[in-house]
Amino acid sequence: MSREGGGGLLRRHRDFRLLWCGETAGKFGASVTGVAMPLVAVSTLHAGTFEVGLLSAATWAPWLVIGLPVGVWVDRLPRRPIMLGAAGVSLALFAGLPVAASLGRLSMGLLLAVALLTGTAAVFFQTAYSAYLPGILEPDDQPEGNAKLHGSASAAQIAGLGSGGLIVQVAGAVNGMFANAATFLVSLLCLAGIRHREPPAGGARERPRALAGEVGEGLRLIAGDPWFRALTLFGAASNLALMGYQSIQVVFLVRTVGLTPGAVGSLIAATSAGGVAGALAARRVAGRIGTARATLLFELGLALPGLLIPLTVSGAGVLLFVAGGFCVSAGVVAGNIIKASFQQRYCPAELLGRLTASTAFLSYGTIPLGALLGGALGTALGLRAAMAISTAGIPLAALILVFSPVRRARDLPTSREPLQPGGRQPDAQPASGAEPQPEGTAGSGTPLARSTSRTSRISGNTS
Image (cartoon, rainbow, N blue to C red; front, side):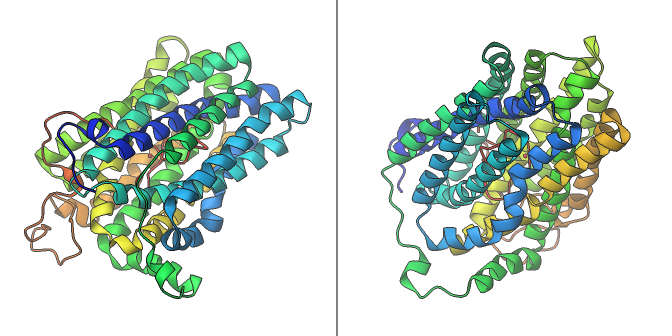
């Protein structure tokens, strides 16, 4: 699609503007649910620490079960109808929870079922979305598009988390689900208004090959490429640690620190402000020091303050939670912006869906394990000890990047060519559009899977 007129993407690109509006609305609703869902379990259903961890695990478990074949299906089929269907399913499920509560049918089993089914819809949506975005944007526009999506989603997350606690106090935790359902309606309307139509997928013109063979292509691509391999292993280890503490942080703040639901939402919203800061800084920092060096700075340097989180106590001590969470969020979002544009440029277009699903299978597959681990550690050792162990894993995971080609390079490559001595690509431009841009862009990051507002390492576009 050609670049029409001047100005930023939101002004001159109607289809991207619709995509951006829908995704921002979805992130706001997901953030409300990220506070309301655990509070439903804790305050309404009196769930234990392990059950709350199990709730987070159910949201992400579908990546382990269907993540790989979904990547093949996304490469074979038009992506926009897949996104429309996934958004519609999530709308119905989230709207059904308050209805079930009003009929006296709400239970922990139903809550887990909704988390599992909306997580399944999120697998389809995010895999299709990650492969769809490069189709509506030119390569030169993709860095700005990724940054805007990440930054606006982080801002929406702040508003959603902050208002989520207030909604719970005013309307009740269960009724907070209506906010997320409404945002899926907005997403449906925005997606329906996009004019861009995809060309037929390669699989539509040829006889489809065996599913296992196409799944294997994505896995072999990761295993055989040092850049994909390092970033995917890092994402898996980092998500294990991130979800380990995020799955129990609401319980920790309520039961150990002694905060009210409104204060919990405000506190988590304050940490999420780091995502906006990371989105604003990502391209500028990468332009100055290089995309590979910026990745190390964001993923390792900003992970260290996360060690302050388990030291949180009531009163002024809550600032430790804010400081640690702010830095972690900034690092995750900034790193995601750089990695998303790198992957969109570096991966062959015809394999992007399979690559997205394969990296998500490996990276997101550890998220339910992290949630279960956090719940188990919290039950066995206590919430503060579990938070300490989980947050320590975030900087430890970044050591994978230190012992990879990322440490030896200034920039991530833009094409799959042999590296020259010193880790630089021959005649390559910095990946992720790291060249200095005239206006700061804000961009989504946390994962684009809307059934949760957790911060995680994205695999295809969208910590």
